[in-house]
Every structure is written in C-alpha cells, then in structure tokens.
Length: 466
Image (cartoon, rainbow, N blue to C red; front, side):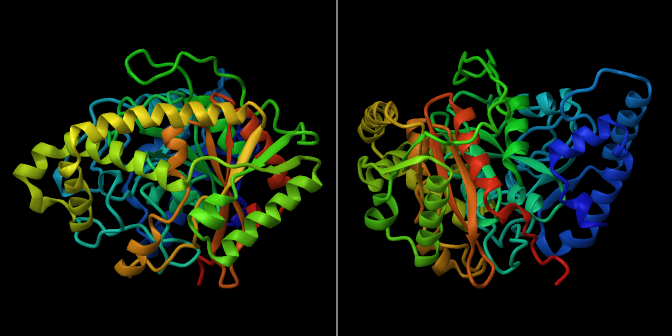
C-alpha cells in the first residue's frame, strides 16, 4: 500500500471518509495488508480482528450512504494495548496467566472510541501486565521498534507505539503508570499523552497501580492525539479515580500559536539529577530554541530532585502491583516472565509505613508542583535520557530503562505529553516532554502543535522496506 494511506493522519482520514473521498473498507483493507506484510518483523499484534474490522468498515460505508449521523472517528481504525478490554476479544496482558481470557465487555475507553465510529483492528503487544520488560520467555515475542527492529520500542505500551509508528493504525491506546505511554512515544517518534489523573476512565483495563494508572493515546500527530482524547475523556462514576471535570474540545486552541506564553524548563532533571546523553540533551535545547523563536518566554525552573519523585512513584507502584498479583505470585510464579516476576516480587518487601509515607509525599510533591505551575503555561523537560537501546541486551536495558523523567508526572497527576525532537545520526528517535496544569491538556497540545508545525519530525518514516 502507499505511504499516503499508511501514514494518513487520523483527523484527515475522518474528514475524507465523511466527505466520501475515502472508502472505510478500502482503508481498512490496506492497513490489514500492511500489517500482514510487515508485522512478522515487528511482532506488534497479538490478535488481529481483521474479518470483523472489515465488516465494521462495510457498515460504516453503508451508514454514510444512508445519511446517518457520524461520530468524530467514523470508519477510522484504531488498536488497543492488550490490557484494555474489547468485548469478545482476548485480553491477555501478554501473559501465560491470562492466555485464553476473553473480555465480556468493552473497557470504557474502548466503548467511547467505538461510539465515535472508530473501528478496532487489533489487540497489541505489551510488556507483561504493563510492568515486565521485553521478555523472551512468554507465549508471544516482544514488539520491536520499526525504526530499528533490534532496538527497544519502549514500554510498557510497546506494541501500541510500534504499530502506530509502522503505519499499521493511525492511533492506539496505551496505559501509563510510570511513563508507559510516553516511553514508546519517545522511542518511536510519536506523540503520547498521559492526561491528568482521572481525566480518562481506567474501568475495563488490567490494573497495575490504582493510584498511578492512566490510559492515553499514541498517535503520529498532535491533532490526532487531541482528537482521540476528545473521545475517551470524561467522568465515569464507576471508576473511583475518575474526575468530575468538564471536557473541552482539545483541538480548539491548536492553531493559536504560543507568542507570549511562559515556558518553564526543568533542566536539572537531565543535566544534574540524571545526565542525558549528548544527542538527547541537544535535541531538547534545540526544541527550546524553536519555542523561543515562536514567541514563547522560556525560563529555567527548579523542583525537587528527580530521585525523590522516582522513589515515591516506585514505592506506590510496587506496593500496589504486588497486592494485585500476590495470589498468582504464590500459586503460579513460574508462569510469569522472569523480568516481570523479579519486578513484582520487590513489592513484597516494602513496609506498610513506607507505602503510607509515599502517599503522603505524593500529595506534598503534587501541591508543590501545582504552585510552581501557577507562574507558567507549561514546563518542558526530558522524557528518556537515551535513545532506545538494543532489545536483546538485558544489561543495557537494565541500565537505561529506568533512566528517564516520566514518573514525576504520574506522582503529581499532571498532564504530560511526549513529542519527538529529532533523530540520532543512526536514525533513532529523540524526544522531550511538555507538561501542563491539571486538566489543562488543551494548553499542552497548543504548545506541542506550534512546535510540530515548526519542525519536520512528523514527516519522517521508519525504514520498513529494509
């Protein structure tokens, strides 16, 4: 198929389908053909729902012909990380423990995408239960990075990042507890949003940490990301963490520009607390220059050291993850991948007092960060400290995987968006984060759109034919 269809933005596809310029059936057929041609090298798909997707595409086409009211994503394909339920399809968590598990109902986010006309094409690879690394001792292989199949695609929403970057679908959902939407976005040159805690329902999603879990979209453009968040955001009375916050049109301010906006830079995260490699740091600094050139006022700011946020996140995450998995770890430990088991078991050794203190620390850190944000429209900092490393080198993975600055914004609950900032000399993606005030995702997207419009990164394509 042509790159035109494979890399067509979701917003453009929706507009063309509604205008009868693009057949939903031909579109899905082309994407399915691309998946079948290339996924054998990338292993992003755990379950391809091809026949059903074609049936839904034909129904979408008939609805247009019949003059029915159309949703915002009518006929547009999407995919799900395989911890997110879709009625009648497997939800395995990429684990032997859930092999054969069939979802009895849609997750709320899935249902909202379907209600908007979206067409679910596939369930995608993940790191096991959203906490393991790229394990090679599971029933399914780990997803690989389309920019270099020997490189990590990020995680834990690994298949979501790789499938979108490869042009298999224009958008996918992942989850983010310590950075698992933003990491694959960073590794695969995508846009990945962890919205404000409570903005998107987690009901119907396998939990990892009730206090830190988020669901968010991965796309190739800022506008597509905002469009997906428009659809999945909103209060869910059956999710205890769901927020009663009005949902604006996140696409409404995308073209307002950023002249006069105040942008803070948390530079010490990547120059002192952890040292980013030269390419990553240079990419962020160049991006800041672009923002200044667009009229933003950029100032350096300081918060508590990155390590304090990371320790808080780790204590809460591992405590809650162990509580969720305690029974299976006792009864079926051999059915976990080795990396997953090692990470989960660490939660057994965290004292109750440490967990309680981490919850108290979380509130203090969130309050302090909220106070800082009163003076800024957004802040910018690193996402990863390194470009993606080799997927089969456990030693390098262990050294680099945790060297990142994403957990602070799970702790504070702030909206945080990963965006590409360029590529290394060997063609691997570079990235940064744009972080906003609670429930002000619209401002984050506005800054990201201005940056995207001024840079060429969204137009680069991975070398799939190689």
